[in-house]
Image 1: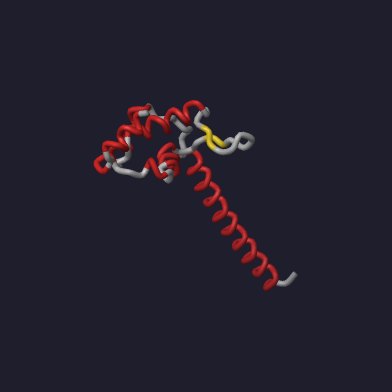
Image 2: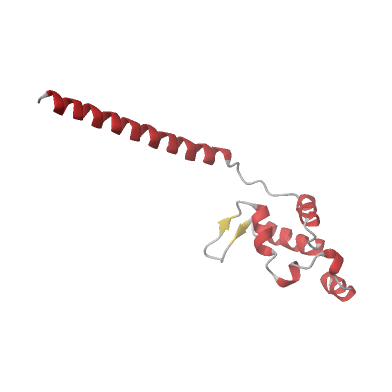
Length: 118
């Protein structure tokens, strides 16, 4: 091995070390994100009501949503493929796609209020 081959090998080794360092930083960052994600804590019914009240969503539907997830053990999906809820805020965002969940409280008619109570 002559000197130029040795220098080239050293350069390649340094390049590999830099790549390994970069990959280690990426892995550490990803692990940090996973560690930051705390275990799911289900909301109290009042927390869910307050969250929806701030967004103008009807309280009855919040109760319905909360009790539905409570009975399902805070999971979602089809019977054979249930997955744990990871974010209750996101679950509300998905659930409010149902037509009777989208009306803000101040625009509900008396008939709507009556129907939601039955």
